[in-house]
Image (cartoon, rainbow, N blue to C red; front, side, top):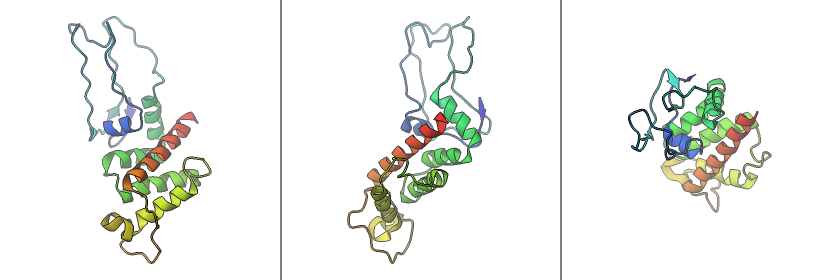
Length: 183
């Protein structure tokens, strides 16, 4: 159980590959009296706001002895988010807002501040980051969703589509979190 302010939406955990729905195993994952009935799991895309505890529910058969905390990616992510404000901010941004140009760039800024040079990490090329930045910033390309209302700079000749920008930032977040959880 981890004390975290706010929430981590279920969609964020699925998006990052940390939570994956699973089917119940024969003879397991049922509560006493429910034998033969399928286990139900609920996913809340908007998340469940919590000011108290967040954790993974454990379902055991009667008589099972609880074991030590399992080394589950969700537990490692919760540990990391509870001790690292940048990780917590990125998770909040991914899960609590529309992934528009402003939010995507905000996520990029947080990670860039943490690692300094994303391209040196091999998580994205300098070129793709340049196109992402100029597309996100330029109103001639991104319209009212752009980070800036006006720009004197030349827009990119081949702008990045929002879906490609989302995929780029998700890949960067995924690699950043994996690196953070390893250290």
